[in-house]
Length: 416
Image (cartoon, rainbow, N blue to C red; front, side, top):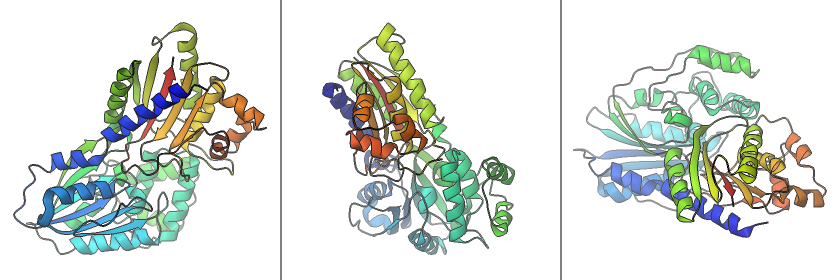
């Protein structure tokens, strides 16, 4: 096991994550932000605390009231003028509803002269929720749970979520009107599709009820009749009280990773920033590229780093524990077994991969032999979706803790 390569991987990942921490980007975006009246600030998502803290540093006593809604364990303490509520992710819970009620009360009586600074990051779909009429939280929980294990993409999942909600799919902007919204977005979706980030509470929805119903049929999702009635109510396709600015994305993280790799002496290339296939398939494909580099120095000459950004999916059929990044890494380990000087790492930039404390996995040519020594079959582990326990057993997890940002996943293939 080449510890030098692994240390280099962690250095590159650290630089990439630091490049998309939201503080500097928020402050830069707010430099020319002026308002004659007090500003109301709502921050939602896994990066909500950092974004709100930066806004507080920039705006100070201009803030009339602020609210942060973030994932459990993603708050770093009190922020002046802000209430901070932690809630459920990736499944909404009672705190989600309580926090969203507070947000709606905060903006309920605003006028056309008022401004809401809306700070949005990934995870907001679960953290910011108010069920539509005749839809209950339990309905949303059951539907979300089915979608998350179905193999549906985040865009497909959110197309359903938007049509079950009073605040998603542009409906929050309608509630805020006639007040104006200035929205700063840390994108965690492919191609930075703004109606998909946090299910687009303040952005015109590009999906339709027909598409949402098609997703339900495609993945055989069971829903109660009352929820189907809500889905048939169309979301807003035009909003005139919102200005939106993207302040961070996986493209920035990948560019930073490339720069960091080159400073460490590696040839590097960004292969894609829009990876969106099954995690297991991505692992197979990337291990094939690693073998090609090992044997032929193509498509990049060693020492080199291939960089990929995106968000894969897992179709859960087993009863194990893991996440898309751990499953990708373990799948890649099969393809690079026995090869020297190759490491494949897949990491969630928010520091949480699936329902685990790991950010992802990092494997090399010895991963398979170390698993075999423990009596573990990687093929069986993948069949049971139990990549977490297998990688933990041999020390191949990547654990960063909550990072305070969220811009998709970063995958590195490093060859020396």
